[in-house]
Length: 405
Length: 112
Image (cartoon, rainbow over all chains, first blue to last red; front, side):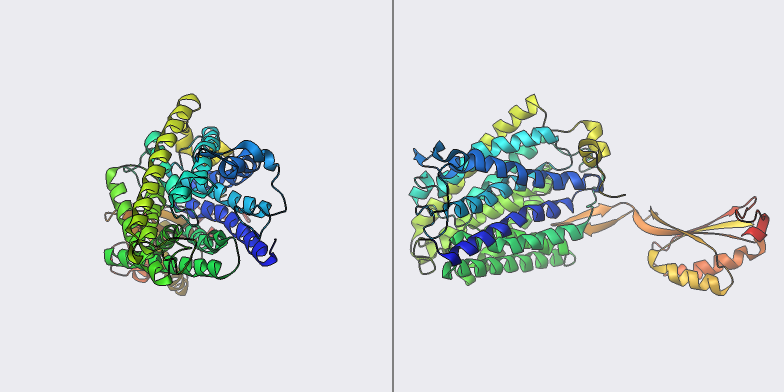
């Protein structure tokens, strides 16, 4: 039976999560050089268009269609055939099946957009489009099925991922690492300074992400009652704890950095994502703070390594997602969500092991398939812009537009 | 006639302008520029760690004065733009051959 409150909340949440992709575009664009601002925005907003089509045509059914061997969904719902206004109780009994589908679409969109931070300022746009399409089809859709699809093998194993710690952040973060390795450093990286174009863009993007994340995590309750409220509260709490922690770390280093605080907020949001339907506000404080420390030092190590994961997708989303997924296995509490499980702190060390298996399998799968896809596309279509295009800037050379007069 | 070209801190423009105006130097051209001196750039905060900015934003003021007023103008600018810290800027002085006022065709110091 359709419940109007639940349906309204899921539809609003869908809009909130859709807003996160342009928010991410600005979050990223502020940190690149002036000559690549439009190109960086384009990567995210082109994905919004491309994956919205892919999801309707075949992405949704590959991820959520009737199960095959626990690995992927069947093609029964190709072109949304049979996905209509009545609920599909296996996923959400009180909202239209179409509402569940479009809510999930917003997640399928933002996930590949997260990866773009690894290869901004040097990506070849056609190669990027092809990579994104294949990445969504061969990594996002199957992993979403494993973790969230009925019959998915990680779901059956008991892995907890309320809103996408493994499905969204680990897949994107680890794939970013693979792509950064394939595409190589920006010209002059480490030799010449690369000044960010507009830090206020980045701050605006970060706090629009915070806003959208209420839909991301709160909407994942797929209902509008207590669980959605709990998820929303722990989301805000973890973001705040991580933002404060990061601000303090930058202060100890030198001065309280705005960019640091905003980065911390995003990392806290990443880390609470898998846990958001299973943990208390006090646990969220710990999850946010721990993730901030982990990601902060991951960035420092990444810089020292010489790898040009330009906007630290691995450090923020990969490590933040891994931290969150593992800590879900520590702090999960059935008193918060009886459909979940207890974690280590509540007498069930087994859950931490299950979380670790999910993290490991999803990370290895994402890295391997991304690396293969990236190598093949690079060989055939080139993932990297031509040297002179990169020097002049991708706004002009790839898109024929200038961000600033 | 001399052209005085002063590179100053952005935040000192109003003090310099007011001081010059008080002594009768009204006309000037101001350009936003970037530059560096022997201190090189500065370090700014990145997400974790810092990054170096090699060129700092400054302003360039240009004005043309009668030869006997050159030292006065230099003194005014140097006093008003000075903080005593590294990065206060520099003043360059050039000879000027002629000046033309486009509207009237006047030449020389009358045209300034």
